Image 1 (cartoon, rainbow over the protein chains, first blue to last red):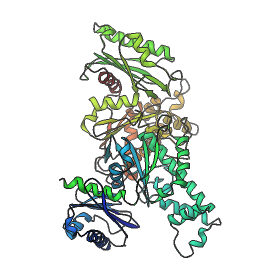
Image 2 (image 1 turned 90 degrees about the horizontal axis):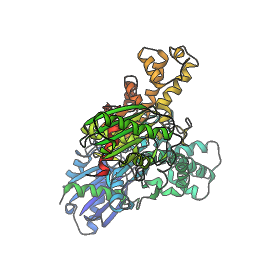
Image 3 (image 1 turned 90 degrees about the vertical axis):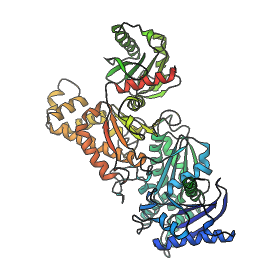
Image 4 (image 1 turned 45 degrees about the vertical axis):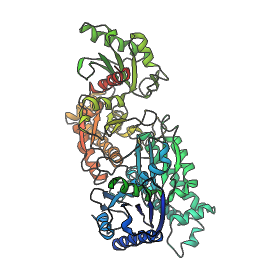
Length: 314
Length: 314
């Protein structure tokens, strides 16, 4: 048995799987704030899932973890992370390994999602495709000739930091006009906030008692709120801008969207596809298929599990 | 013996090579205006080179041609080309094949340059690298895991049409803010023209008798002309913007620059590298090597020859 963990900004998701990717158990927990609490939450979640099936945690052959940020996979270290401040040169895999007695491996969360989709999801149908994970930021990955491309240091496809406007919005990474400043869940919230200053919206009522979230905007867009819809139109436009550039570079068979914001594909994709049709090159844009991640709740955790499976060997 | 031809906007360059890439002869001719004249020039150039060595054209096992534009390699057709208007669904390879009696193959010129560099040039030292051909436009290619990546339709890496400013300059391709509108030889000329309207420069004297060219700007920059230098600084900045995005996506071991403008690397690269250092992500930008194409005059033609060698088999 193998465990896969996907640590998101909001939830920790876990699966227990066999070697072939059959899910034996799955679970979910709110992501706590501190690094210490996250470690405990991971172990407790796995224990709870395994106990239900009558197993101890040591029955696991490996644990694979996907986490946002720059990862040193060999050492199991999170170099820096956008979500958790305390994750700075943080040896997450060794810590979990010590706590559980199970060999533990670490991978970037967007890469884990690609591996999951390649292993068990839509990716199986294509040889050359790209994936974008639309969440707090934008992660991504490319599968080239049926292999997940990782670059020289194992950290390629930081598509979120593709420049779409070199004079544009400042990004914490140091660059200006990064794609994720325009087409992530964070960007959706920011763009909506700007619109709310000058316009009536059903969102005004909701933000009296809580901070604005992408989920709220999605819910109000479904109810027909004009401002929420406009914000999605704008993000969909920027999504198309970034995708057009990626189509011109990768000439992929398919683009697969994952991440929380991909749930709102009915609002994002039609306009994004239109922008790609207007802006990408003929011949390159013509046969691209657009798909949504097969199982946003489980695929990234499955991909993380696969990292462990392939690392422990037999 | 195998021939390789590189049809550029200015010159047609040719090599005769053996199967291992040893150059037996090379030659060069001005590129004429019409499609008919180009066909004749190709055949004459090859005949002249071969006659010197005591051979007829039929001694060739194959001819490989690299040409700018969208190519259908299987049919040997140029679908569209930025350089030659008459090349619209133009069956260049079948025509040359008929004229010479030698099997002829067609490839995009930037891809041919990548193949040449991968086969015989700096590319041999790396597994994952990208190449940019800075000419009239910007072509490019990626080598992934030691294989030239071509995408689903054989036409990936249209890096010249990566968007660096989605509200930016209109590109004939239909997009706005394409990289090649800012960092190609054409862009250098355009940017310099803008500066010449308001500033003194040694270039004013030269453009009394001839149209401004990238070569003139390069020559005057070498002589210390302030405006020419400023124009190179600007193009170098934009080159850095595009490269930063590509580094964030590909995390390459090396970036190799080719094309006519790569000859001016002393003016372009220092500033481009600075911009990449400022804008690309740590971890991804740290170990990138910058190299100039090994032999701008022969490598693209050699790559075209290699396409023929691999296509004819034994």
